[in-house]
Length: 237
Image (cartoon, rainbow, N blue to C red):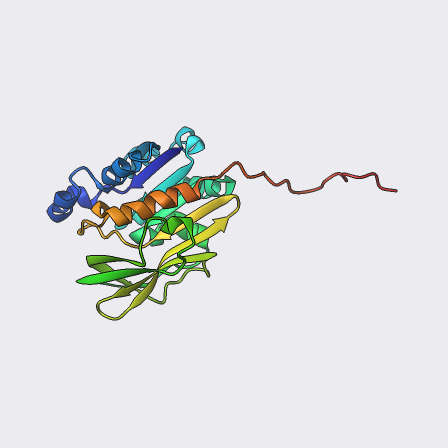
C-alpha cells in the first residue's frame, strides 16, 4: 500500500514547544509508525513545489493522510481540487485534527466544517461508539488523553456515514471525533486528536487507530461505474 503523509510543517519550525515534541515534524512521526505496518510511506509538505503533491505522486497514492492548521489558505486551489478528484476516483483520505478546516475536507464535505475550540490542557476521553468497526480493532472502550485541545459541538459537517468515536472533555463538551464518509469511490476518515503542542501522535492507541484507518480507507479494487448514454445489454424490440 502506498501512503503519503502531508503536513504544513510550519509549527515545528516556528514554535520551540512543538519542535521539542515533533523534532522532525508531525509528518515524520506519523510516517514512522505507519511504516511498522509495511506500508510504503512518503511525506509531503506545504512549502515544497506543488505542496509536494505532484500528479505522479497522487496517481500512485492509495491513502493520503492530511494534517494542517495555520496555513490552510496557502494551499492552492489547483492542488486542493486535484486531491478532491483523486478521492472521488478512489484514493482514501485520513483527515487529522485541525485538517477539518482544510480546503480539501471542506470541498469534500460541502459545509463550513466549523466548531468550538479551547486550549486549556484538558483531559479527553474518546469513547468507542461502534465497537464492531475495523477502525476500532485493538482499542478498548475508550482512549484517554491526559491533555488535549478541546473541540466542541456543533461540528458543521454532514451526517457521517459511520460514527466511530465521540469525545468527552474535562470542561464538559462532547464532540464527534471519529467519523467516516464516502465520496465517489473514495473513503474518508476524520479523526480529531492531534494538537501540535501535545505528544498525541506518540500515543500507541492513537497510532493504532490511524493505522486501522489507513487500512480501512484503501480502495479494494471496487468497480468503476459508467455514466451517460448507455447501450442496452439485452436486445430491445
